[in-house]
Image 1: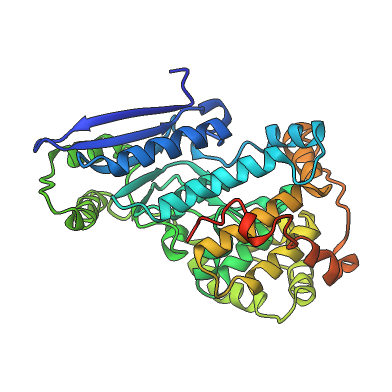
Image 2: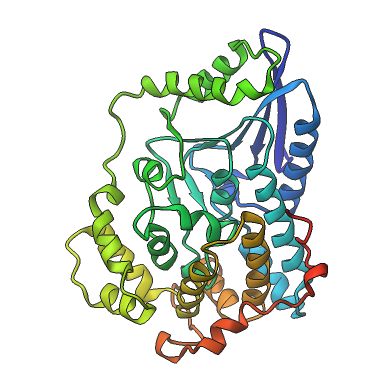
Length: 372
């Protein structure tokens, strides 16, 4: 149980195998470390090539979280200890994390993510690309990077584009949380199961007739999940997104970030979800907001591979500036929640934003050049 990722295989009734990977860092809410990323990526590669494996399940230890994000506290310490550019620890962590995320998006077998509890940042990077994304009524999803001086990465520049009514931009600027019902609307989840339904899921996967046609297996998994979902009844939480989608569209559809900022900071919101989101924006990192706005403009027509290459450049550049280490300090180290951001929104010009997109590598030397 000391292993940071646990691996298991279950034999099905017809002689195939179900593979299970469990993030095993419950005290840190299964926050991703580089060791966890490497172990998971290596085993997913092996399972994908193993003809006996018919499906993979990915989950987290404990009831509180599937994965609360990347281990940014450790990364901050390494940035301070070795202030090189591009920082080798940042390059290694983000390159391998994004490679893992890309593998999940392109996985050739059914990959079920059990997204119970907290699913944030890097955890959402693991879940977003899975073929079958399961949440429970207690799931809480967010991309709260603006609170630590970062931006929604792990493919966020790609999947936030695919949400309705500028919802992705709203989530990037505010870090607003989503519940299970919201996740369905935002296209971040496919099924909602009861929190105690995980054993029943494994039983159903083991009892299924998998046959020899690999192309039929995703539909088989979907049918099993639909059967289990039918047992939930009407236990979905009320959706904040559904209630406020038109308001979100109007708030975000202002033409420029200054106008959006004015709307978020000057409006007296009656809805508590919108009011809390506006507060998050007000206290969040202004550079994160400005870069997130630019990201969604630049990435509209990018492929996933192109978006991840852009994100790696952005991430090493954020690591080379002061806001990210300061944001992590304020939220997770000293926990005073009083970050001293390097710039206010009114002081940010286009040159400052554009500098975050300047690659330290030639195109052929980019660490993610191999993603197609």
